Length: 65
Image (cartoon, rainbow, N blue to C red; front, side, top):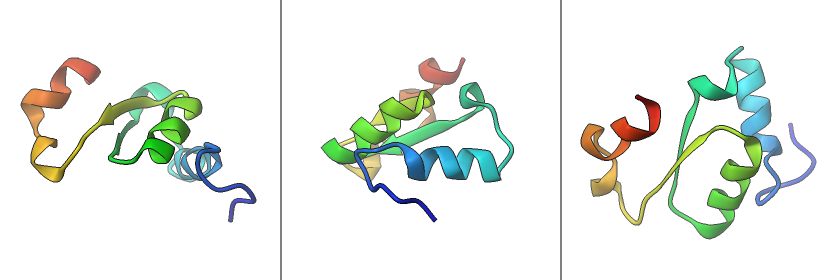
């Protein structure tokens, strides 16, 4: 459980910790301003979308590779 909600990154940091991942192994996909702020503050890779059609390999491969 986290104490602070978005735009604080605690929810992302908790999930990353529980999954035993490193920040550079994580891609957070966000569609809201507050969520994007939280994702960026977490230090993980972030992909901002306007709608789900933007979530595809061609759009995100430059972020991870």
